[in-house]
Length: 194
Image 1: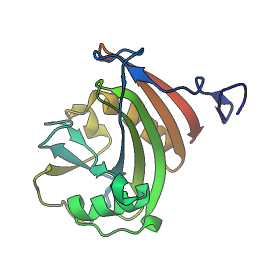
Image 2 (image 1 turned 180 degrees about the vertical axis):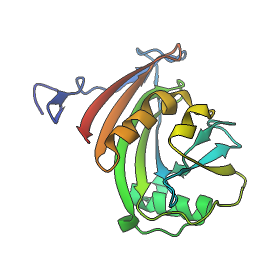
Image 3 (image 1 turned 30 degrees about the horizontal axis):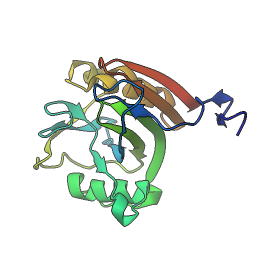
Image 4 (image 1 turned 30 degrees about the vertical axis):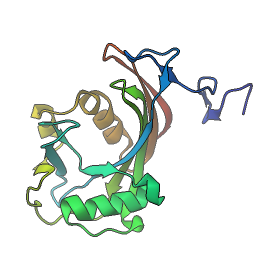
């Protein structure tokens, strides 16, 4: 701790304080927001195409994103255990923590004025042999890196997460997103190991 700030890799975060958001989502006095924790799985096939899910439910209804889901916080589930569980439930791949590479951690402050998010992004070391069947969460597709540009992706995925993932593939990154009431975003990369 340096002068009320924490330092990670030479980058100082803002002074530590609770973040309060007004009803409209702006910082200031008001109610605090809950934290939600999730995992995303970057799974590839033998042709290095990435597995994406066209979401049939919110969040990201109708958009393509990696499979994953929320941690069971009441049960004390770890991010690695969550990733393994979500892989089995959504994709049908049985994984162990050793099958995962932690590619990145993304925190979002005040996303949509509803919650703060902490997301663990895992690249799965083993290759998926075939396309999983559709289920209640949506339908799957396998896409090359070049094909991602033509897909309906969440804005933050298109503008930030995918570029960070590709730049750090095999390494690690940590990024923080400040979300504002108007729907704008301000991103900071807090750690980068390409």
